[in-house]
Image (cartoon, rainbow, N blue to C red; front, side, top):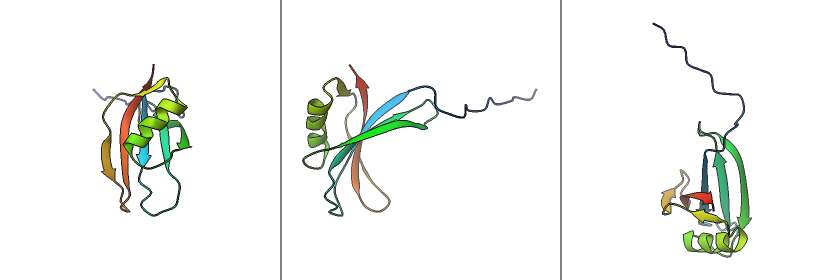
Length: 97
């Protein structure tokens, strides 16, 4: 019996995962910000938005979320990563209350 895989729809239709990303301004661009990403069930980016923060790192990101989007909450601890070009960043799952 041959199994035929169902193709992935051509555009995202489901908002499956939402997560925050904050960064360290490693290269002194002067742009401190937080991103909120939304992905579908296939891991494809559906949408994103970003806003500036006063400083880098998770504690400032948490503070900015409380001020900018009080109904948005972080649901997992921040996970630290280092990009291929050496920039520190953190990612955490998020959800609307």
